Length: 124
Image 1 (cartoon, rainbow, N blue to C red):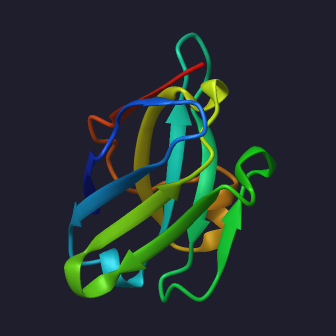
Image 2: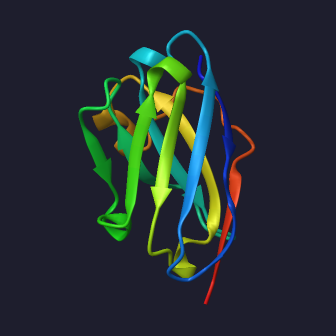
């Protein structure tokens, strides 16, 4: 089972950038699709971006397309989320998780444990 540790969050002004990292332990990381999710205060957790096990395929929720980029380094058991042109509505706690396929993780299916997440706050 993949166990993630997220980092890289912080406070940034609108239009700024952040790069999140997710370091994941577990033997299945290299064969698992990975996804980033976020949960804003008072809202349900939602899917943000996903990447296939080999990094070839990616998928984004509409609100972040063209601004966010997901990538991974299997040798380091790490997945990244580069966030540019940040908006106040991107403010949330960001989490990563794993599942068997990209298609399933975009539907919100996960198989790893949830980490502590990393807080991203975008000021206007």
